[in-house]
Image 1 (spheres, helix red, strand yellow):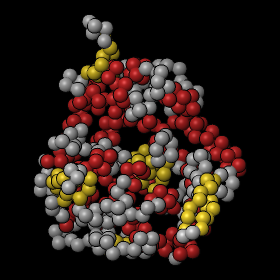
Image 2: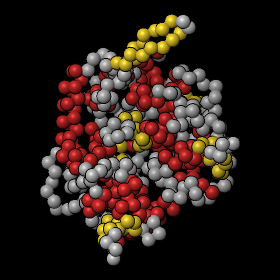
Image 3: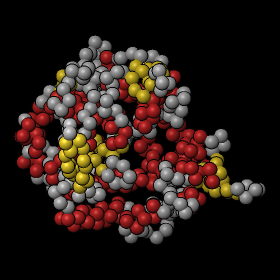
Image 4: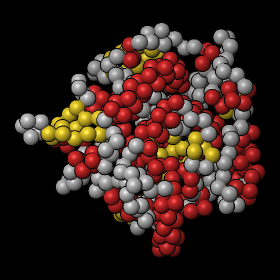
Length: 431
């Protein structure tokens, strides 16, 4: 499968073939590298994320109620295409949402007492987390090459960093000792570093390895020689085949994410390993130790990272795991998970699990397969009684389909996983 393009060089035209990625999912083409448990994590939070979004919308309203027709503008955020009704989606979580009509027969949506209590609990958790969130944002700025980042880009990380809803209107002004809001000539807003705290210029990996909470006041970031924790699928035998290359990568020194990277040559081994360190650090800041990869790519220039960031994530699949379940890729920090559970759960993760437990009807007939649930989700329905075995069945079915479709794939795929995700085969040639 390819697209034929024509382009001119001087006075002649060259017929160029550009191999394109087939419509088959990139990650599914490498069944042996798939982490079944992390696929379950992605699937589990699909509906929860939509419910949390709806709770956040209601939270912004003065009385925490809103006409249901006003929710139509958020259909894309909750993946609810017409003609399916928003009210049907809301009715599937009666323990969290209430519907009622006023005297003019206008249908309104509000939250139950239990949901309102959960909102208050979330506010307390976010309030207690504010100082830590400010530290993470400051360290994010410290890693950037210009010590400032576009506010519109940071907003994408708001939920991941556990920042409050008023992040851009109020919260950014609460820590003038760390950062300030500035505008460029075109009126674009940036968050700019005010004070570079040497004690914070130490990675989460350094803290964990050295058993410290922060560096000394005279700490200067430089070269690091700390290995990254690795987790390979138990059935992936090639990890042993390329053990030499992996060891070589692990032993190679790299520049701290907090050190000046302007002199690094793009494409060099040092450049790529520093990029791995930056992604590791950013994922360590997040609530669930995972991010949407689109959000990472927004910062390639600011953080001095390679253009082919996805290729790097797939290559280092002992450190990261990329899932394509849903509409977007998500990247996980593998060391943070044991099976499908986070090893260390923050108060906010525990809060989300409480919300998750209240989504959907109770005592209804169990959905036989998760593919059935996926169909219902697309139609705005969900029965949260489905357990992990339902998810397992769906993933196994997709893996079987993946094997069948792999046989039909030619060699014309730009992102051929056998090449890209052989991970350290390229290292063997370079090291």
